[in-house]
Image 1 (cartoon, rainbow, N blue to C red):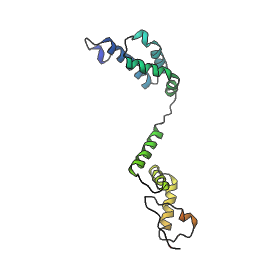
Image 2: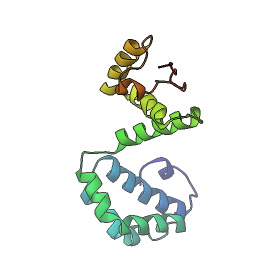
Image 3: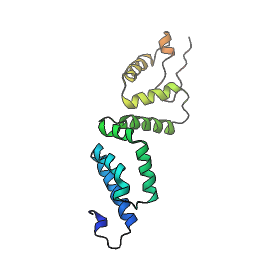
Image 4: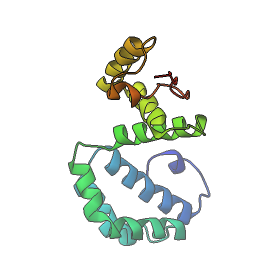
Length: 154
């Protein structure tokens, strides 16, 4: 009986039990303690019988996905990097609504993530800026922002 609820007088047993189970699960997840998580999910009814209905639903869901949760605790990998990249792409799409070309959007994303293709495109754009397109590769060269390529007379 430790924590902020241990000093509260007249605390309901439902609130106390729910808090204790929550804190135990939180500790197990933060410290990657697979055994503590499994033990808490297996014995919560005997130790804390008066948890709230919301906590019962959460525990039922955690039991359902227990193999995945233990795998997460054992693994050191995360998908946080991918989630960040996806959020940046969504932001670009939202801010730059109305790009005329998919290639413009793709180049903007590539610029954001510093991929090598952009450096080559910048070099080709610099070479072709004042040049009449005589080579097919320059005709397909997209601009980096939402501008249509300059049409030169042949």
